[in-house]
Length: 107
Image (cartoon, rainbow, N blue to C red; front, side, top):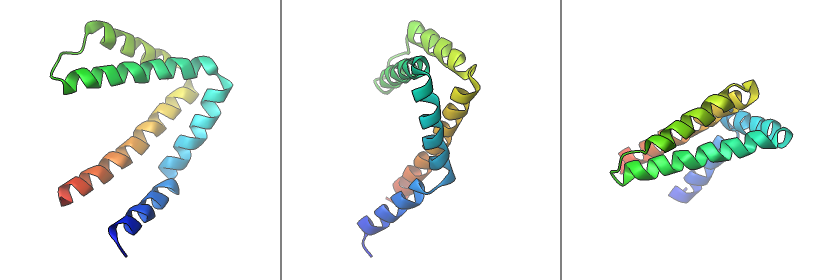
């Protein structure tokens, strides 16, 4: 079995994981029902990307971006279903981060 076969096997395992199933279920439950939540969530993700880009460029995160991000995530987390989705998203991101770390450590 070659490395690509193992990678596809791992991808299938992740797709069958509880973390991924929860993430997909909650995404499908939360956002179609409440388009406003989806819009607010997209805005918070965009602000997060901007903050990460600034950090990677060695620049400070602007107070405006940080404040808007904190306001949006605070607002979103007040909705129990959206909060549950954000936790599920964090869990699947943690799995992916762990996998990337394992691979990077091997190389």
